[in-house]
Length: 331
Image 1 (cartoon, rainbow, N blue to C red):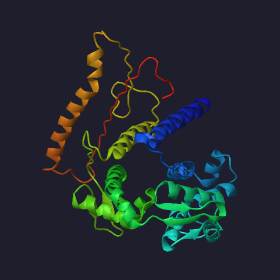
Image 2: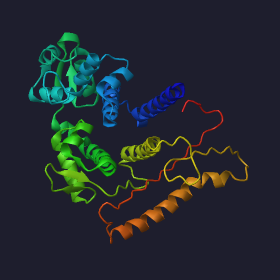
Image 3: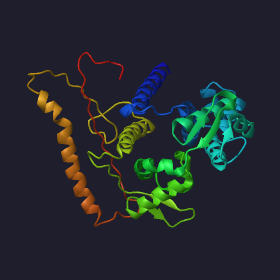
Image 4: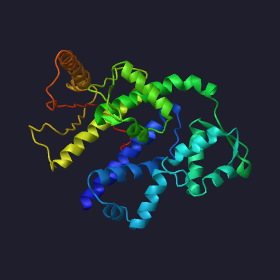
């Protein structure tokens, strides 16, 4: 038990390091007010998916069952406008008004946790979707006009398209409603980006009820200026999936002929070391070999489809980092 707790603590630590770097990349200061709540909701959802009951999950979080259920309901949807997340409900309320005072917002969502409402208002302002004037009780909120958001639309849609492609490829088939639960964006924008992906043959839509989206391939070109966020998610997701499959299979050690899992090798070299350049070239050579193999497999698959139920998807991930001896050991 102690070893498992130490492992979980280590995974949380490294994940927060990654989130912190993403949130401050390229000089950005991304809003993080929603992160703690999102982690709680996503974690409980995954535990339920693995077959655990609410009483067991509540105990794992050190909560009474009733307290757990109240917290989950508060975070999953608005108590005032049931069926929608609080984030969406507040944004749509502000969009319907020309100007809204803070007191009116708090009164409108009086059945929801006040701290959560204020946190969402702050998140909306920091994301640029809403702006505010005044201070304290005199604060007035207005949604940012559509024309002021046009400049960032192309970049935002390309980023969303990359994320959607990755998620649909790895987790599909998924319905529009399932994708809405993963992305806090307007339904119209989500539908528009999906239509673009379908038109570009990156994603296919099944003619079922409700319609489902799937993708048999996903490529973020090497060196692409747009889509690096999706590429990072894809790499991280591949690593996590490999670890989860190994854990589900009950495997806690690596064997030479394993088809699932990963290995980490760290090389200590220095200027003048006879193998320094060989080690540094490892990722470049591996990428080249993988690209050649991927092109060959893709060309064959464009001419021949697998028999129903016979598809085997093999994901290979690789990466490297180089740090000096004096670099921080925290990462």
